[in-house]
Image (cartoon, rainbow, N blue to C red; front, side, top):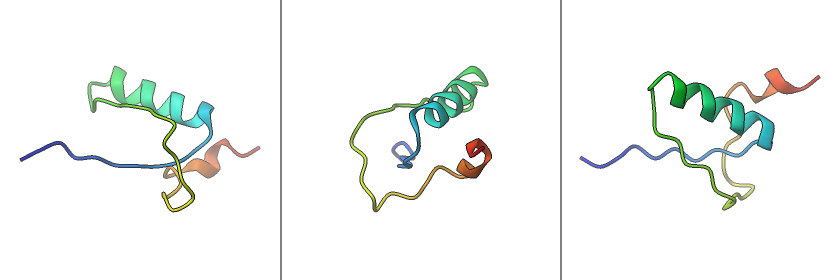
Length: 51
């Protein structure tokens, strides 16, 4: 069985914070790239960052 790969799009601040939390908790290995397109779902709970 290979890795579970999830692709999401979001603002850099959102992605950075989520990646840091997941990595620090040891919950996941996170890779961030710039291969984003409009067909990707938004990061879950992304509305939490909207002021």
